[in-house]
Structure formats: C-alpha cells, structure tokens
Length: 183
Image 1 (tube, rainbow, N blue to C red):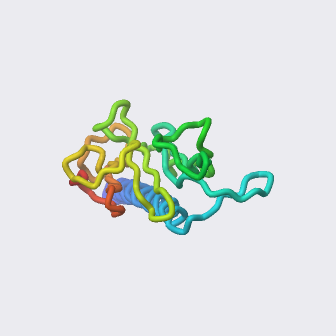
Image 2: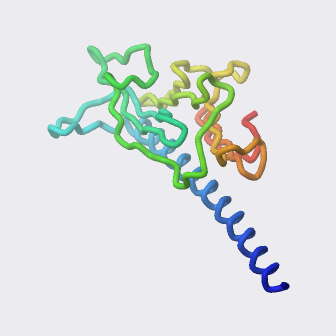
C-alpha cells in the first residue's frame, strides 16, 4: 500500500512539474520571438524574398493565428518610401516568416480583455523600433492599447493560478513574463 501511495505521489508530482516546464518554456520561446522581431526592426534588417531581392519593409511583428499558434511577420513594402498608417497584420500586405505553435497541446494563448480573445498585434517599426500595438502607437499607461497582454494558460484553467503565465509587451519596449496580470 505504501508503494502504491509513493508511486501515485511521484506520478502526480512529475505531471505537475512537466506542466510548469512546458508553460515556462512556451513563454520563453514567445518572448524570444518577440525580441527577435524587435531586434530585426532596430537593426533595419532587409527582407530577402524568394527571388533574392532585398527590400526594406515597414517593420517586424507578431500576430496571433489561433488559440495555439502565432506568426512572426514582416510588414508591408513602403509606398514611395513611406509606410502606411495601418500597422495591423494583413495577409495580403504582410509576409508571415515563421508560424509557431505551443509546445504542449494542453496550453493555449489567450487574452480575455480583447474580443475575440486574441492578443493584440505588436509591430516594431524600423529604424528606431517604434512600437505599434493593435495599430496604435501609444505610450500612455491609461490607454488599453498601451500594452499587449498575452496569456499562456492550461486549457480550462482559471487565472491567475500556477497554470497561467502572462507575457506583457508594453509600448515603451519592455517585455516581461509575470505570474499575475500585466499592470
């Protein structure tokens, strides 16, 4: 009987730890992808298309595809050297360069403050890395679009809890992972 109790306890503990590792690892990968988009914009990296032509683009961003995946994308080609005022992801104008899914099928991306519950698009505009969140460039904390709140959670979990992590991308450029909601 003691052996069975020990076995069940170890199994539950292992499953709990594995869930936390997947949550933490998914958050680290997402933060790394956001920072890569930011770094590409700050360095004014040119996009090389399939024909080998290098062009300046209107930024690098991240866009949620569905509850379990997102794109890193390159903004559209400037018209006459100017970027348009529309910085939201648009499949006809923007080029997805990487589609990433959650590492664990038990996890999902979510933001209950937006409708539908998708996180706001984030685009970093070169050359200075100006940040556009849901098509707005706002530095004031009072505006709901001054940050993109990305919640990674276990499917069915109530947050905040140990089954949730918040990734906060602020208009100031700060990116952080938190156990509680973004301030």
